[in-house]
Length: 120
Image (cartoon, rainbow, N blue to C red; front, side):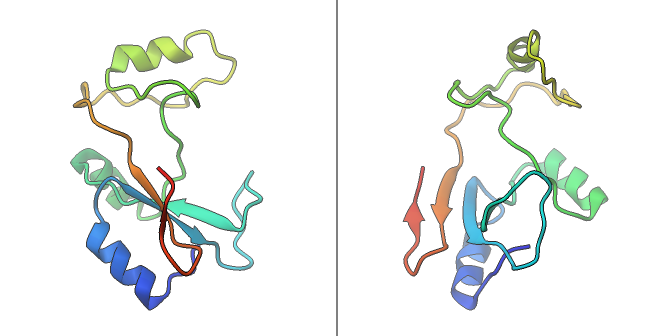
């Protein structure tokens, strides 16, 4: 799904699994439902439950952050449920694995140019 050269591969191997999301150029001809961009953002989490689920799926998982864009990051299940309570679009699934530790959002690094650029 992404074009990964030797330099990118080294950066990814040194950063994953972890809290770093990388923006890469999409492979030509790759279609992603609902997305019309030439880039794709990828992350390999360092979270055991998620990695077990991903391993069982044996394929990538397309997802977004749990919080609504512009809202603060959530770590408590009751906050997540409450935020979507009156929304037209509801999550298809909320997996209650307990409250998460408070932490900063992932770092986002753009690798689509000659020099990596930190976006967040």
